[in-house]
Amino acid sequence: MATHATAPMRHHGSLQWAVPLGLGLLFGFYAGFLHRTGSPVTWWDVLYGVVAGIVFTALVFGLGRIQGSLLQEVRATAYGALGGAAVGFLHSLTGDSVYGSAVLGLIVGGAIGAAAFYVFHTREP
Image 1: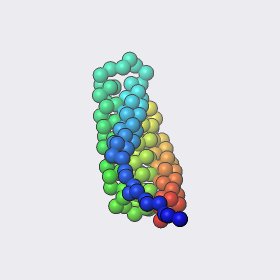
Image 2 (image 1 turned 90 degrees about the horizontal axis):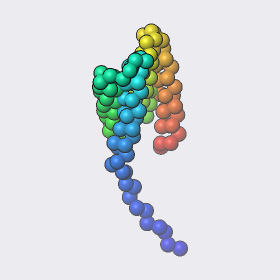
Image 3 (image 1 turned 120 degrees about the vertical axis):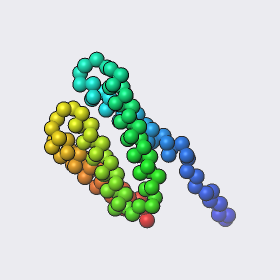
Image 4 (image 1 turned 60 degrees about the vertical axis):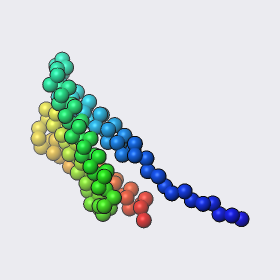
């Protein structure tokens, strides 16, 4: 019985940009929506959302580029920190207190970090 030849695994370059771009679009749209605070949409709100989306996209893309060189624990912490900071920032746009935003960011960041830690330790050798 002949064995099958294994083809080298190829990574699609489009996913390197598609995931950060999709997340950045959602983040920017939601940040612009929250910045509006119930008033009619202005160019300032649109610009705010675009800039927030670009910054978030750059952070997600940068983390995705360096994640292979990080230890699993550090990588999970980085994903938790990025997720917690993003949620805390979005919550701060609602007008709630800084403490409420910080607590929510810490809770969400801890949950994301714990989930990432679990995934990295169960899926990777």
